[in-house]
Image 1 (cartoon, rainbow, N blue to C red):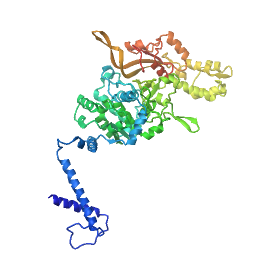
Image 2: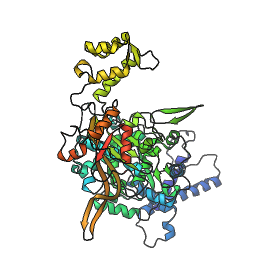
Image 3: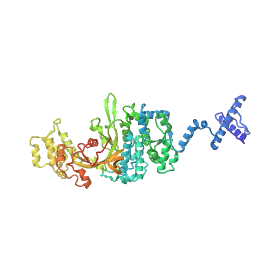
Image 4: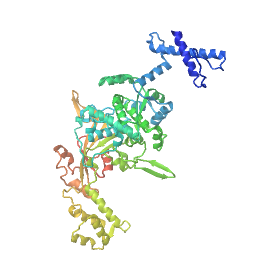
Length: 610
């Protein structure tokens, strides 16, 4: 039987070797034996037969090795080397763990993120931070941070998670096939106020909000065309059939002893899959959430975002691609990482567009509007200027940057970003006045031009007011403006019967994901009260004066009570009193970069952005 199989293999091999030869003449009888080309000598024929027989024998040996059970006496040398590598690759393919990066890609990725002289402490920070929600009921909608460094990644994911939890709660159960086209979607312009019952979000809702956010961000990095999802080859398919805490145990055991200290380490364990379908990417992320919750989660998501953008594109986005994205000496996420996750491009600056330095040199900023925005303490210190694209995002959610940490600020009411009606009216009147100002910026116009302004802005002044303004033959802006402030709205003026004069009052919430002592949440123990180690959530009452009366507002805020908090609850009334002085904290200065002269108040410990 073996001889017959060997003969058959030999015949097939010979026929394949002659496939490219010219066709032979038809024969009256079929050939029973294989015939070599006429040009082959007997010695060459025997040599070829020996090679083909050896190949056939090798084929049978491989087939027998696959079908036979592994021998318990197999030596260590036989289980090592190439065989072990082939088995690992086979296992990775079986559980759909993606493709291995090339040696060049792995080295480029590692150098781009960490540079050449990265410390083991920084590598440990980025290898020990999962993407997990806080177990504390009051902050359960937030992602908790235990290690310094990856806060830029966590805070940005947190901002997108809040977008889905607060403003799209009814869509958390849907997987939309055309998700990339919906990334920039927004509700109608009518006011929408989200619920402040943060502890009511179910675990399933939070998990789906996280998956939707991650998918949205990766496609944003991939120009809405692709998403790359990075995972680990050391995670077996044991997580597929397990649930809950058992998955965590399996993954923790698989990651035991794993460290990433070089590009080679990264290449050995990293596997990537590329997706062009949002639905497929969503399902893959949903299945891999336990891996992103593991201690490697934040690093894996950063790598996924960089690969989704494309390593060459990331370098082209940057002003100085020679510097690592994780900054020394403390391993913080750079502004380029935060911008990549916010707008899909790893640009280093926060102003709008790009800045021309002359000589063909440019500094790159934010070129498009964004879903969630960014504010920074550095602007209040005059180190930078955040543009309108980041200051005025589609949703009232901002990542807040300090010198060493990233946190999140958000509102439940979409109206906090709407321009005040009186502010819009002021802009309209001022624009019409300036268009008639021929004084070179002196702030006065002729009587004829003044009548044109009144017609354009539909202002109907009483005759005595009109005569008073026109008496001198020209009209000064400051005098005209005082008349407008005292003129009823139904006559085209700005007199506000509420007495607020355009003042806006609203609530903001600040979330700091780093687990630190919360003095407001101390627990009673036998030794006394012990502060709880948990993230911080702080509610702030913000009062914004009209921009044209800063002096009057500050005087009113210091001495005169108002009725701004009359409709608030008893608890909120304590914070809402406009006569309360402005409470100082670095976060309040960040808020003032978005709402100039805002007065911020809160109850309890000041919000922390470090």
